[in-house]
Length: 114
Length: 114
Image 1 (cartoon, each protein chain N blue to C red):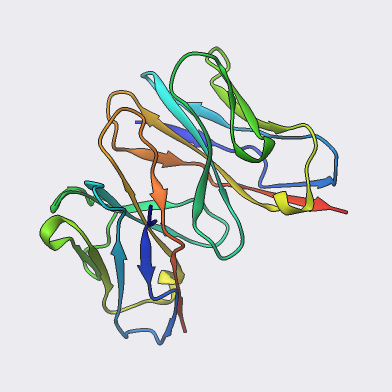
Image 2: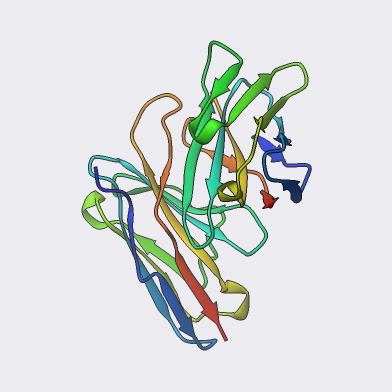
C-alpha cells in the first residue's frame, strides 16, 4: 500500500511571493504522483501529474512539481502566487502495482494575502 | 466533454433519516469512485466500481451505507440511517482504463446531518 503526507496543513503567503507545498509519500513499489486543487465549494481539479520521464512536471496555472525519488517527495511550487490561487491542494499517489488505488494526503490550505 | 455530474449539491437532514446521492460519470469511464471528504481532511475512498462490479468497498460502513451502479453507468450512494458524523462532502469520480490515467471529480454533494 501507499501513503501520502502533506507536512503543512496551512500555508499563508503574500501575493506575488513564491510558494512551495510539501508532499512526501511512502511506497514499496514505484508510483505515479498527482496534485489536485480544490476551490471553495467545488470538486477536485487536476493540477499536474508525474508518470515517468522528466522529474520536473509543469501543470496548469503556472504550477510545477519535482519528483525526487531518493527523498520520496513531490513538492509543488509556484514562483509568484495570485489571490485566485487561494484554495486547498491535495497530493495523491498511485502504486504501479495497482492502478486503481489512489491515496490522498490530508491537504494544504494555501491562503494568499494581498 | 461533459464532466462528472452529481446531485443534489446540498442536503440537510436530521440524524436517523436517509439520503441518496446520484452520480453520472464521464461517458466511457469504466471506473467510478465514491469518496467521503470530511472538513479538514483529504478524500477517503468509500467504494470503487469497475463497470457494474464492486472492486473495493473495504472502507464503506455497510451497516448504513450502500451503493450501486446498475448497468455500469450512473451510480447511487445511500445512507440510512444517517449519523452526525456522516456530515461531509461526498465526491464522485471516474476514470478511464490505462496506466496513470487521471481521476476526474464531480463538484460533490454536501451533506449536513443535524
